[in-house]
Image (tube, rainbow, N blue to C red; front, side, top):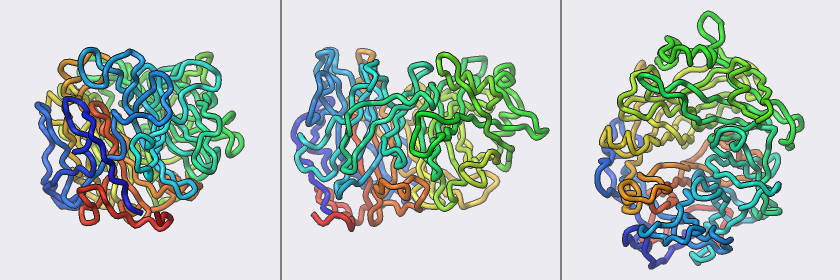
Length: 526
């Protein structure tokens, strides 16, 4: 198909031209597969542009000021809620930025869509970007903004497509009882069946962020709630969960479990132990290359407020230092699950595990009750705040940072995206090759220094997503080996905060900087 050239002339941020965004890309200094990365992180001071590794270019598919084709009150723009009456740009009292977050790419009836939840502003909602639409005014549609029970809609972070229930599953990253999992049902054309956001209380309630299906119809959840601050850092506080429905394709009932890790002597590592001693030698051992620990799933039974974390602690599950997102490794029959751990996001943290990690959970099958846990990559000051994660091939793992404004300043480096080659065995772990040095646009710079307080500051990398759009069970992430930016496979990421631009990555050899990119998409002959 031909990529659509998005011709727009309105301004964004502090006078930035949206027309300049169309087909925009920046040169880079190293390829993702290079033995050493030549792309340096952007400084945390001043306005910076994104820098991509050599061989990569990007074009915008949506941006904050893009009006919705069907606005609903203050939910009026892709990245803005105008219910406070503020202008879209900075002063006085700019509008709420709605922060489009993680991406799901699906193809329905030959139409190519990108779905997202929004995690900022007065309430969450769900949008759909029609990647084939040439008219920017018709490009983004609001598909859900009200709950089926009439209650307040939380803001959303994680999202995945459940082919067994034909629902977008979204996570609200908030403590119980507000947080949890919600579903939006789509028909076979990718349109909302009733436009309602349905709570799924059987999956518990908590600060879920990562959400992923497996081939058996289970839902895996990764929780992100920061622990108590103590001397030297923070206490591990959040869990990895698996929900097994009573009947495949029905998420109304089932069993919720949390991951328990055992010490080398066979005893469980519990929340109480780590709260009593945040320097527990187990945490040091867990963050050591070559380590391996036995795991098992323990059943959790949430109480009156449906709190998953409280139930997980009571059941003896093992908390981590802000795990955030997870994905299955392709080619393993859903037997390897990789998840990120953000850490303390503070240069001065001295507790073990302060800079986080990427962990590998290995099981004989996605339904197995036992397995082993080992570190796949260990964070350090340069590579920390690890958040979004996605496989770009059988051995190529993409990981992005969300280090936060404070740590950006502490280390004088904005966030980056890295590629890890997990096929290479080393006592020091895989080398992190930078494929993206994220910049900071003018709007984010303003929010960082001057904003009214309800909009975030520095840009964040989120929504890294590699998919061929297959909406069937065969298209679950991890079922097929991705061929990044080849054939039907497309790659997206969102530059959250600031101008809130969602980008599609292209191979530089096939990308046209004027927006007329060519893409070998066999099911679209437009």
